[in-house]
Length: 443
Image (tube, rainbow, N blue to C red; front, side, top):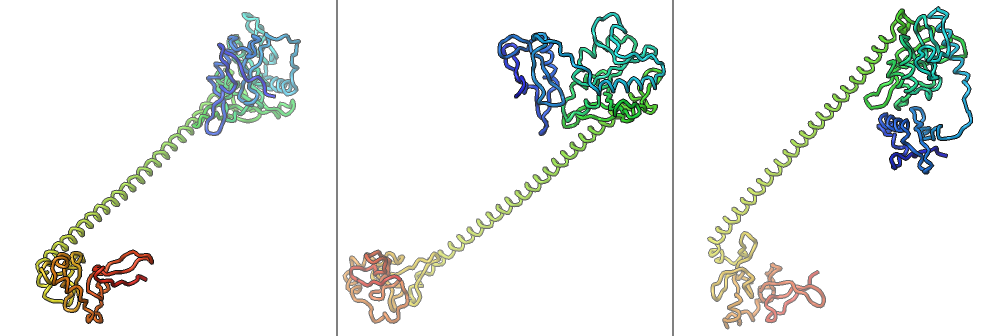
């Protein structure tokens, strides 16, 4: 069953999903939204959506997103004491830390679980330091569970240490980020500069290990954990100013170096991506220019081809015009021979009327052709109005049929043959019908 996922603020419903965002395919939480909701929780401005009037607080963190939810403030519920006993790992870790401080400080004044008012009597808050060395003016605050790390507690610890230097150490189970904003650990990092994680193997001090790390966003916007140092707890010590050392090197100096390398790595990756982007853009521009050149070359060839075709067309028209003029000049002389049909450059056949001397295309003649009359015929006007022409048309030149070879000329009367439609389909018939009734089927 899902835990409470809704709260009411100023009469408006707020779902727990409002604290999430995504980068790439990684779901992460939003620091600003978390802080805003937590502030509203502190001010008692989040209420139960059922209308009971109970205040809600945000339970949200960086570890398991599905654990994030709202819950009713303890002050609004009647509960019996449910104090949680300290876990095995927590107490064993404190034993190891006590041994470590005794080993490195060698003062023998390490007090454990020291209330704040034992250090500064100006407050009566119940928060406590895990360890305090008044001689070395050094304190350790250990957190087994990151849920116990609150701004209020850290602020109170910081403000009431007087001139005591305090280090915050968390259990190793609290490290890691998985790309999420490590909300609780960032509370420590913002004060200490880095986080310290303790891992133990039972209560043996020699087997305990300490890791220093910091968190920062990479170029993708995901939160990364960067290891500063990692080694046995006994490899860590303090100098005379209570600065933490790792193999005699200042942890602050090692952190500065690791942080510089991390940021430098991100800057190099950023520059590499910029260069890659510029390279891809340059390649894209190059492709566009090449495509543009190819397109321009193609268009140039098209234009040249169009010009060439236009010139060829103009030359052909000019040649036809010249041929027509030459045909017109020589056409009259062509009718002196009756062996070859007279055709103009366009393929049109020309005929001369034997009666009126009219020269025209064959479509203006009722009959033409025949032996010794290849280019002679009878125009339509003469066939209608000239009795001599009518008589001559009625007498077919049968004696010339054996020598006919033109399939467009009627073998009966020498008239032009045309295609016609009939009951049995298309056929060829004489254009002088009904005077001449010659037909021929079309296969």
